Image (tube, rainbow, N blue to C red; front, side):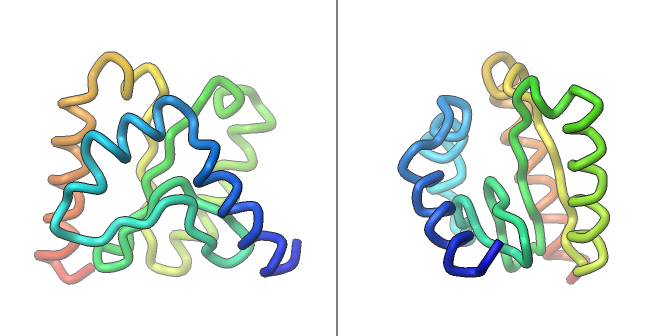
Length: 119
């Protein structure tokens, strides 16, 4: 997929976020004092959320991520991003909908640890 195609797709994904992505973005991530980007192109991927300063990707996983094909794709993607020094953390839609406070606390803790340890 070309870079311009990925950029166009990422714009579309920002306009059409899932309910869980909107919840995490509007109720938590956009209020942080550190920059977090939505639907960011990194290499050949579009990640849900990316914090450059912490080199952290935050992915929200719907049901397709728990099927065999989805788990294989996610594993390959995680490995490629890890090779770039980027940590990928994942939360299920269920966690966003039923354990939102805990998810936010975990994200904040991870960002702080990555920045304090200078990755």
